[in-house]
Every structure is written in C-alpha cells, then in structure tokens.
Image (tube, rainbow, N blue to C red):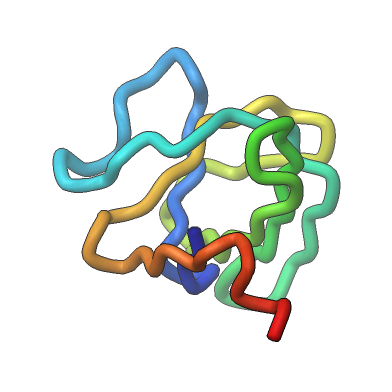
Length: 88
C-alpha cells in the first residue's frame, strides 16, 4: 500500500485514531524525526510495512525518535501496489 506522507496520521497506540475516518494500518517505532518549520517529518518502522513516512503538523501531539506509535490513513488516500509492480 502507498499513501502520501501528508495523509499519514500517527498517534499513541493506546488512543483511538485521531479521526473516525482514519483507519489503523499498523504500529511501529519512530526511527527518524526532523523539524521542518510548521511541520515535522517522521519515519516509522514496523514489521509489516517496513519504513513509513508521515508529516505531522503544528497542533498535533509531538512525536519523538524511539517512541512507539500507531499509524494509518483514510482508505481513500491509499493506493494498493501489487507485489510484482516493479518486475517487468
């Protein structure tokens, strides 16, 4: 599956998704966190999806490297990529 980083939400795994239409995809650990001015880029790593990028904006709870988070997106923002998409 693929989703643009600005469409990925990250939240504490014990909490509910930040919006009712955001689907939990997986949980992972933040392995990178970069301040970008009005947003923060975070990269999570999970056993299921490997590395996933997200952009977190001012007003959202801060997330830090080493923190375990749940993450997901609205289904309308996801694209399913077949496993053999790169082999032609």
